[in-house]
Amino acid sequence: GDSVTQMEGPVTLSEEAFLTINCTYTATGYPSLFWYVQYPGEGLQLLLKATKADDKGSNKGFEATYRKETTSFHLEKGSVQVSDSAVYFCALSEWNTGNQFYFGTGTSLTVIP
Amino acid sequence: DADVTQTPRNRITKTGKRIMLECSQTKGHDRMYWYRQDPGLGLRLIYYSFDVKDINKGEISDGYSVSRQAQAKFSLSLESAIPNQTALYFCATSEPGQGSDTQYFGPGTRLTVL
Image (tube, rainbow over all chains, first blue to last red; front, side, top):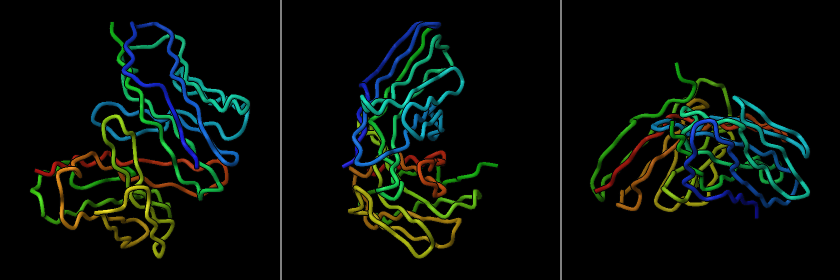
């Protein structure tokens, strides 16, 4: 069945450091891929998405490229800020499964000044 | 105003009590979902509904029931709460769209079962 695996945290970085959070997926068809962010005390918000292979999703300085050959959708940001401290979830949705969402376990990021 | 609202935001109850969590949305979406979030486990799907007459079990439906009262309202019930149902519960909505379905989440309900 479909599933998402993302790197375990917690991750702690200094401000302006480079961020990578790894995400790989297993799917039977051609899923859409998503990164959601959860700030403390809030619900999940869509950060970015990509709907087909080689698409790059981007938002707020974050980027992720849909790599079909490696079944990956790694999240990157060149220079993190304290305000990026949150939990990040990788997810997929596939037409074959009625667009059900499958979430990774989340990666907690703390950025220190 | 928020597009997806959940009530209550926090609830403490005792083992054996019946609890209802409510979700309302103004996005006009047909599809609604209930998830629970536990540390280290991410989000797990409890129930989902693709329209008012459609209810489907998710990964972890045992011990829960739902009611889709209208397009805009989707309630989750715990008939007899137990401590391992202590978790953060999220409602979400989405629009169908091949390859582009996006989910929109409420703020969550923190439930503690003593």
